Each structure stands twice: as C-alpha cells, then as structure tokens.
Image (cartoon, rainbow, N blue to C red; front, top):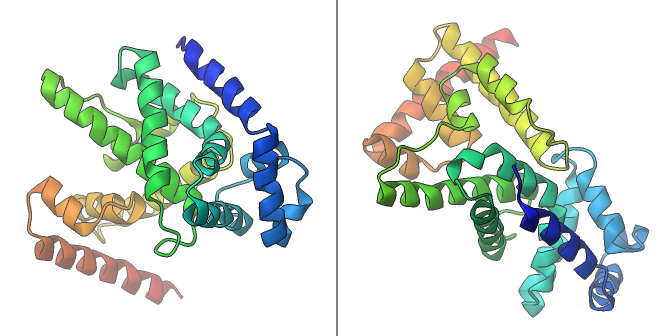
Length: 262
C-alpha cells in the first residue's frame, strides 16, 4: 500500500526529536531520573523502546517519566517523543487495517490523530503500569470507533479484522492473517503474542466444555481486550448486572479448574 506521507512523517518526526530543543528535554529527564543517564540521545531511548517486548517494566518507567513531565509543563513535545516510540506499531496498524479506508493517506492521518488523542488522555495515577499495552489498545479501539461512525454514515458494512477473527475462535486463520505483517517492535510483537496466548487459553476452556462460546466471547472482550463490562453489556444488549454475573461465573469455573490442577 503506497502512502508517501507515512514515510515522510517518520523522517520528519525522527529528525525533529533530534533537535537541540528536544535534547534539553532529555537532559531535564536525566536530572530527575537516573535511568535516563544511560542514553545519550533520544535515538538511543527510541531504540531501547523498540527492542524486546512490551512487558519489560523499564519501558513503563520511561513512559511514566515522560507522562509525568508532560503533566508538569504541558509541553506537547513530550507526546511527539512517545509518538516516535510507537511509529513502527502505528505503521503496522496502517498495514493491517488498510481495508478500513480506501484512502491510505486518510487512514494514516486518522491513526496519528487517534494516537495523539490517546496520549493526551493517559493518566499514570490511574494506570501506572502496562502502559505500552494501554496505549496500543486504546489507539486501536478509538480508531475502530472512529471508523465505525464513518461506516454507519456511509451505510457500509464494516470489514472483518484480526481481532474479530480471534474472537470468533478461528485461531489458525487469524494467526496466518496476523503473520503476514512484520510487526516486530517494542509493543505490537509482545502485545499480540501475549493476547494470542490469553485467547488460546480461553479457547481451550471452551473446547473442553468448561465455558460456553458466549462466555468465551465475553472473557475475550472484557479481559483480553479491556472493554469494560458496561461497554460490553451495551454492545450485546444485556444489562450490566447480567454481564457481570456471567463473567464472574465463567471466571469461577476456570479458577476452580486451575485450582484442581495445582
């Protein structure tokens, strides 16, 4: 998929964070946090964030420090730094969701705006850890909601996406679909692998007859992909209490099974 602006934005963003003004921001963090003293430039910080998986607690430490600095001075350049950290994942999302928009430039623009909206809403007091997963998950869901509104206005049927394939338990097809993309970066690789494992475990419980398909979809939607019970209840047309009780029963069955195994 050709999208010149995606390549141009990457080059422009990476060049921007290497300017003298951004160097001052790094020096300020180094005075506050000893962890940042191992990095000479923002390029070094970004390289560290792109390596490994999303579960590395040091990546939470980096993001918390940056979000805390933004809270204090409201300097939008902090968000630009995080955006660069997430560029490979956003580019991967652009490839994966190309069917959502016939205009690749428009899709890329919407992805960037959505990511920035998510960054502006992060509250590290309420969510101090697993920040890479939080940012990715919120970006995906907000982008989906944005396009859901567009599809409804245009009367279009929404395309099937990777997460929906997983939710339908078609694991082989979903994994093959996901494998077409080179998304090895600091959060998409670790995040997706982690989610696949969670879904696979729940699918095993369903196949064994411990939970129903409805229970499986409920647990995937609320535990794996972090929809709130209220959001899920609204989507499926049930009351909050009904969904809450159903999830509690399903969780109790799984916990009982795992307890017996121990």
